[in-house]
Amino acid sequence: MLSPAAALVLLLIIGIAAGLLFDRFAGPGWFSRQITGKNRLLVTSALVGIAGSFIGYDIFGLIGLGGTTAFLGAIIGALGVLWGWRMVK
Image 1 (tube, rainbow, N blue to C red):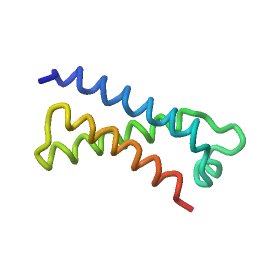
Image 2 (image 1 turned 180 degrees about the horizontal axis):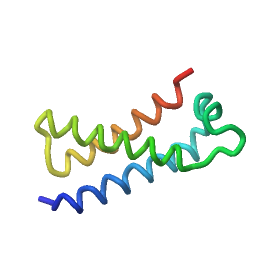
Image 3 (image 1 turned 30 degrees about the horizontal axis):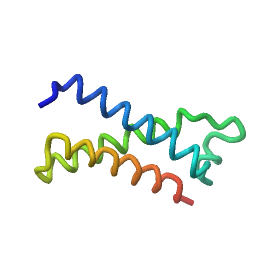
Image 4 (image 1 turned 120 degrees about the vertical axis):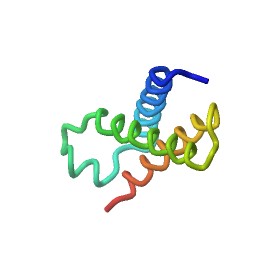
C-alpha cells in the first residue's frame, strides 16, 4: 500500500501525462479553443487530466477496487474526462 503522498504524486503524474498526450494526439476541442483562444496552453489539458485522474481513482475506490487497480481507474478517468471536455459544444 502506498502512502497518501505517493498516491497524490502518482495521480498528478498520471493526469498531467494523460492531458499532454491527449492534447498532442487528439488536438484541441472547440470548447478548449473558446476558453483559451489562440494562445491555447497545454496547462488546461493537464489540469483537466489531473481532475479526471482524481475522479477515476475515487470512483474505483468507492467501488471497492483499491491498490493498483485504482490507478488503472485514474487512467480511465483522466481519459474519460478529457474526452468529455473535448466533446462539449
